[in-house]
Image (cartoon, rainbow, N blue to C red; front, top):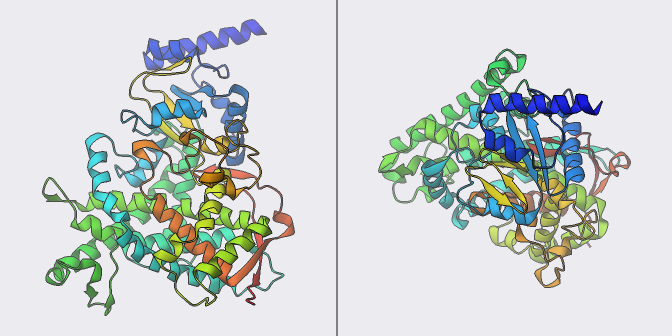
Amino acid sequence: MSFVIETLFVGGILLLLLLTTNIRKIFYSLRLPGPIPLPIIGNGLLFFNKSSAENFQIVGQLVNDYGDVARIWLGPSLLAIIKNPKYLETILSSPKHIEKSGEYNYVKPWLNDGLLLSKGSKWFQRRKILTPAFHFKILEQFVEIFDAQSRILVETLAKYDQKTEVEMFPLVTLCALDVICESAMGTQINAQQNSNSDYVLAVKKIAHIIHMRMFSVLLRENFLFRFSRLYSEEKRALKTLHDFTDKVINERRNAILTNNSEHNDKKSDSVDESIGMKRKMAFLDILLQSTVNGKPLSNSDIREEVDTFMFEGHDTTTSGITFCLYCIAQYPEVQQKCFQEIRDVIGDDVTKPVTLNDLNNLNYFDLVIKETLRIFPSVPLIGRELQEEVVIGKYTLPKGTNVVIPIYYMGHDPNIFVNPEVFTPERFLVERNTEKNNPFSYIPFSAGPRNCIGQKFAVLEIKSLVSKVLRYFEISLAENSKEYPTLLAELILIPESKINFHVKPRMYS
């Protein structure tokens, strides 16, 4: 039996050598710990015909079995799963390794070369252009959107009585989609009132297809993917997504050209004559005003950045908000502290709109959000493609290795965090923090030069929506939702089954 395994192993390595023509890559991969690969498919059978939840659990098992570094082959692709913060610091802090891993290519048909996927000088140019979009003056306007859309969410929750089980995830999803559409494009799709809109359904479909491709040896190959039913489904979803964005860009550009004299100096404070009201500065407006080497961005340039903002700012905040509510509902003492802080900072008038200053002063909320994202990071796995050979500890990672960073499993590692399964917001108080972790131990928004540009936006949105819910309701978990949820990692972290809540109108005394 051992002879057969050894023969298969050697045969697999020889075939991989023929496929990659990279002796050095093969040589160093043999020194990395990991399961024995099979010919051609490598370790693809690990994920064959598995559910999303099972795939995510397999990644966790590899982390547990092999420790700091776990090597796997998916066809000709070499992946190294790395959880050691010191090793990750070497990679993430380097300006040389800012290119995303090959798995991100499956998002490319939707996002093209937007900020998430762009490389080299284009990435640096776009990062420079987009950074002002998250200036506090712009964020102030976004807070108005957060507040208005979260008001619709609580109005929806108010329709449920105390005994009814409420599944929060789909409601939060629609609310977050409304927020990001208005913030990114300056348009309203009213997803909370129309959950069956073509755009909403297209977002769901494309996310599912991307996940399927990441874990399937067959679907990973573009040639084979074209013969699957998912290819035509992807085409239809992409047409819906791109047509919608193109329509909004054209309308917005024409409006600016038509009213150029009114918008030149005070665009963020200008009046949109077509609707007779003060117009907010959307992410799209900043792109329409931007130039590269003196030339304005084309519609295709703008679309890829708007689509990227939609992709990165929709599902991720949905995950963060849902799991934050879950943690608060699970720990009544945490909920009480959050509610008391709301009363101290915002007051008892539930109709009062929150401001950026209010949200910034919710300091305990910051700790709760940080702890939520440690246990339930919105993006549980991220990746980088090494642009040159890297030495970490006793291992050498060859150029072209796809590094997988298991953020979720790092947050649950007792070697990194004390009592990791206990929800303890106070662990993030600097003066009381006894963890003394490497700063790369906690990276829910990635780290280094390619960290998440929208993390302030995300935290403010989570604060705004969760605090709005707590101003109106006391929340608790339904009996069938008190056990730790089974999780999926379809681009973002989501519960496999429903997490149901009870909402009780908040009593002020």
